Length: 428
Image 1 (tube, rainbow, N blue to C red):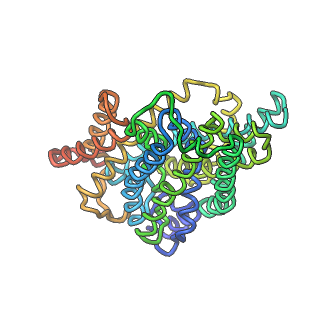
Image 2: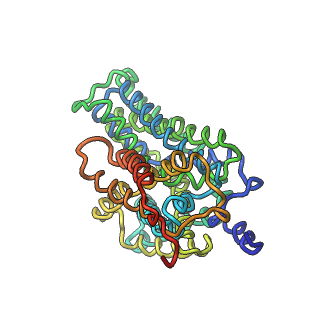
Image 3: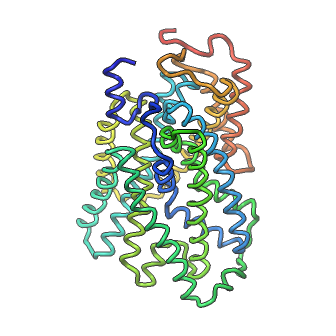
């Protein structure tokens, strides 16, 4: 790599090259960022969803099983990212080609930007409600929330790590405290333990719900964090800690709150108990950690797609997101459907990466500057197209998981059968 490119890489969080070994971060840093990413109210809502159909003991079992499965996916991605030092976007260069990865790099950002805008608007809306601000006040709050959350992503990995050190203890304390408070309100913890749902569901359905909540982030965003791990062991332990420890805590707290107060929305539950300040603190720390990591991952993917510095790209994204909050996206049902669809389109990419790295390339990628990577790999595109189609055609299983498994199997088969011109050089 040329000296100018090395300087550029160092200034922009290595979005266009491998993270050098001497620039890797501590186990605590990567764990705090990953745990902060999965610490989101969505997990608590999932816990409430489980409470609608499972007993408390079944909820604990489904939560553990679901997060163990997610941890397996996290481990597979983390090993690749820590060994190569590459972002998720750059990993797709090895399987889709240099030109092809620029297209695949657009899908993750679309999903992340969509959810970032919705969550920023939701947070601004909450602040406006708490302080009884009018329509103009709400717009200002929503736009400011989008810009302020992005500041941490703008300053990169270290800034998000500092945010996590402040936010995560607060989230843990408030989550547990709210659950305890909810139990105190009911006056009997045995009611939680002996709870029987009105409309029972199976353990398999419960596990599927847990997996569906975080499978996208686990396969698409974790690489951008774990590429900074000093060792593979630290990357693996960090990924498992965030899911089995962090995500499980929020799911179970959400379930307890839902059973005790018949309300799975922890922020709403805190407000109903008159705890306005704790609800604001929880919502702030909860959303900021996840949104900062989301936007950071988004900027890395788009940097690969447009070959632009991460900070310049992020500045453009922040302005766009701030303007989009004026549309009150949390009220637009179509957006949720659209983002859910894309959430099923992206996971097969991870399956292709798994198959390419662990099976086709036998657990080794050459450095990007030295690797003989063609511009396009047609087999990867055929695999992706067929996998996405089957995701919607199969009447069983969890869509995202189906996409990962199908794409892994199909990619290996097609790569063994590929013709000589399946990989295309520029100009051919």
